[in-house]
Length: 364
Image (cartoon, rainbow, N blue to C red):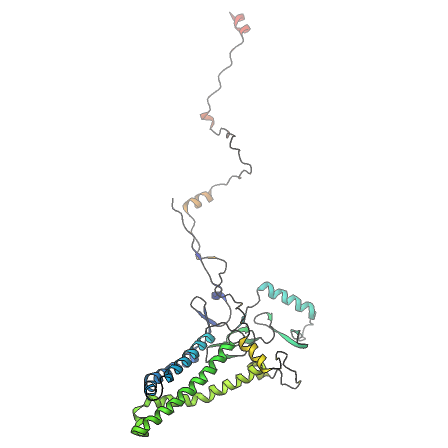
């Protein structure tokens, strides 16, 4: 009799997460679906640095100092590490409400606002929350069915609510939020230094070669250097400008989303309740504060699901066609014998009784 094993399919939570994200390495890597510009970023950094290490660094190490390629390698590795950390991590996505939770929130809203007459617009779904003696409004997300925490916003590209949402950056292929903002800032800062470094030593390389063979001959012999100078020149202004803008935001403990919307600089002149009024404290909180864990639990296991319907065995099929007798609820003790269940043909016929002695003598 063969025993059939029912195979269960292990489903990770990242496989069922809503939103427009892609996952790799069994949920360890999380990115947005639009990754074309991220690949362009990798190509520009890797291509420019490869040309620099292959041609200019060897010449500069001999002519000037061997520390030049070492410092360039440190900046390159740090920039790549922070870029990948920003791109492959959870920016702080807030899970959507479960059906029971969404129904409970709807009941709370109806109880608070009351019945809305037909034809009238329902009031906005807003909760007031006090932070540092200042009222902050918590807005309701109709997609995630939750009241968003302070500073959170819904990203239309990733279709998720992100905690302390800053912006969606296509250059890193991910949202920038509470859990990866510090790495994003370190990436653009190190990339600015790397771009300035490569651009400056490319100019030094051209100047040293021009003293020996002339400027035009140098340009003819080193087309890779000309390409590096052009890439660094056009990249320098945008990257350095972006770093300066985010340095300003970090000093004020403000996000790009809040700056664009004018949350703390509008007509009401509401002060930023998250700012400590001190640049050092703001920088320490944004860049050096504790990093909250991800609340998605991407690699968690959902309840097991059967991979397919198992066909019933022949024994199960035959037993299902027979009428089932009720199962007795009482069990026999070990010292009790079961009753004889043999058929009438198996039971021997009873012996006739002997006649009484008095009747036998009278007959004689």
